[in-house]
Each structure stands twice: as C-alpha cells, then as structure tokens.
Image (cartoon, rainbow, N blue to C red; front, side, top):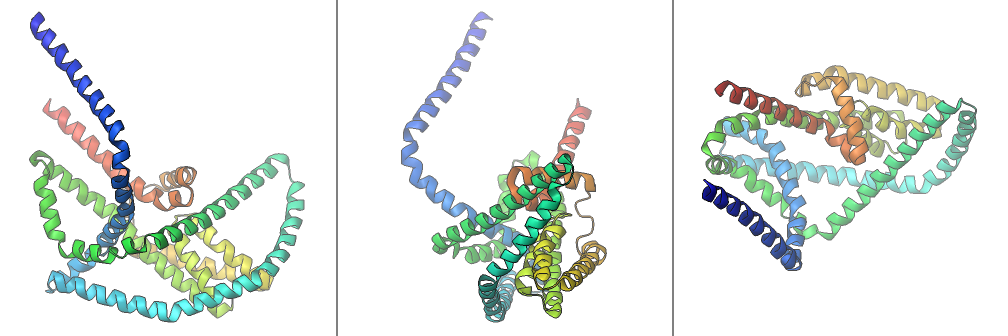
Length: 358
C-alpha cells in the first residue's frame, strides 16, 4: 500500500514538473512565435466576419435549395444579387452621402456655436437645481460625451485597421462563398470530430442557440434596416438637413434595445432645432410614429419573442454591457444574454440527468 501511494505521489509530482518545464520552454520560445501570433491576429477578424455573414445568409441559401436550386447556384445567385444591390446603393447613395457630409463640414461649425450658447443657458438653469439632481445631470452628460467620443474613436480605429489590412479583408467574400457552398460538408466533419456521447446534447444545444441567437440577430438587422429607410424618407420629406446621415444613424442605433431610440433621435432633433423649433417638434412626432410602427408592427412580426427574456433582465444586461464595453457592449449585450440563458438551461438539464443516474 505504501509503495502504491509512493508511486501515485511520484506521478503527481512528475506531472507538475512536466507542466512547469513546458511553461519554461514556451516562455523561452515566445519571441519566435510572435510572427505567427501576428498572422493569427491579422486573420482572426476577417475569418470572424466571414463566419458571421455566412451564418446570417445561410437560411436564404437553405430556402433556395429547398425550392430545387443546387447549392452552388444558390450561392452564386445570392452573390450576384448582393453585388447588383450594393452597386446600385453605392452608385446612387454615396454621392448623396458625400455631399451631405461636405455640407455638414461647412455649415455645422457655425450652427454648433449657436447651439453651444443655448447649452450654456441650459447649464446655468441646471446649476440652480438641487445638488443631487445637478450631480446626476452632470454624470449623465459626461457619460453621453464619453460614449460619443468612444463611438468616433471606434469608427476611426476600425476604418484605419480596415485600410491597413485591405488585402486581407479581400478574402472575406471568398470565405463566405465557400462556407455557404460547403456548409453541409463542414457540419458533417464537425459531427464526426465530436465525441460520440456529446453529439446529441451538443446538436440540441447548437440548435437552440441558433433559434434564439440567429433569429434575433437576423430579425433585428432587418427591423433596423426598415427603421433606417423610414427615417431617411421621413426626414427627406420634412426637409431636415443631412437626412441620409441622420436616418442611417437612427437605423444603426435601433439595434440597441430600449435606449437606442433615444440615442438615435437626439442628433436628428438637434439638427432640426438648429433650423427651427417647429421643425424639431415635427421631427419628434415623426420619430415617435416610426418607433410605434417598429414596436407594434415590425418587431412583433419579424423578431417576435425569440429571446424570451424579461425586460428587466434585458435592461440589466444593457447596463452591464455599457459599463464593460461601452457602445459595443450595448450592441452585444442581449445576444450574449440569450446564449447565456440557453447555456444555463442545458447545464441544469445535464446536472438533473446526472443526478437521476446516481
């Protein structure tokens, strides 16, 4: 018995010695792996983006295959349609966008100077408020300024990185094409690489994550596109300056539950107020109508209750997300919460099944 215990202790210490040696060797060899690590980091985001696009477009391919089209021709047809639509949007939309940006650069400085005077007047009014309310207003004003600066920094950094690695990003369409074309093959390979006893529960888990996460993301993107188009048309009819920029911004912020409507509406109301208070009032009414259409028609029909989460949990997730990762946290908080919910349910189911076996 003593010999067996001695052997067990010896094996245990040998294991830790081997781990320590591996860490030591890895630390010594780390400088040689820097070029490899740089290449991995460079390819990581294009591969993630390609995987996300393939994931979002997969249901369309499945529907085309279901009606009798071969998978290759379905992917080719989707790519041709995407190129035509993108080309039309670029041809007609980019000149308008550039013109509005140029006008904003020329006109906004003077208008912002006038708006700054108004803000100073409001600030003097706020200073007369009770101290707790004043501190609360100052805190949220600082937060909004920080979020705005963070959003601009993220845009600038993102554009710079894309420009620096343009050649790498050119592989994204090809990756998307082959991921969509060989989807069934990839699923089959993943199935056979998975240990046999994990196949059924893992397949069920992935299916439920797809139902909640995938349906939510696809639905929200389509709803945001509809809200953005409605906003652009409404602002153009009202004669609000920079209607395309403001409408697209409202569509982008619509991806943020609850708070997105207020974040997106603020710039439009401010720009309209610079023209006239009456136009600002009409802008508020139009945005309110669009939000009612989105909340009572578009979201229930397109998205539904795919995440099945109580609003309290969604709001808490958004607050945690904005504290942890700012604007990015607001965008990904609800999808991550949906995945966490499905994961916890499966963990609980696994524990219950293990308890029943015992």
